Length: 110
Image 1 (cartoon, rainbow, N blue to C red):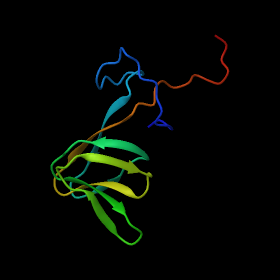
Image 2: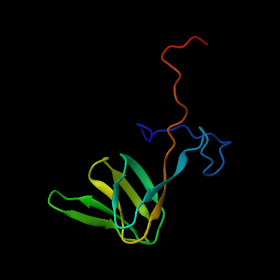
Image 3: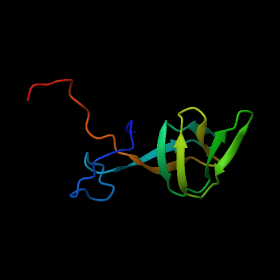
Image 4: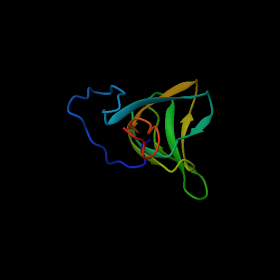
């Protein structure tokens, strides 16, 4: 996840190509049967997946934000938002902002 949502979009990028110039980065995360997994901090476009819902902590309990087999947009702080598998191992499918290429260092000579 990029630290900022501002990103240069290259005209030659292809859809969901997972290249440095592509704005979106297609991701998956496995959630074992009957468990939950905290969603890493970031902004996500979530695809519908059977038996997989998204919950957030409201200060006293966990509440469903996005029901199973429903897509949507989710913002996670990396602590209070999680994937929840109702039954069977499922794979969350989502898009996030492509972080681009790793910087090799600071003030490198070219």
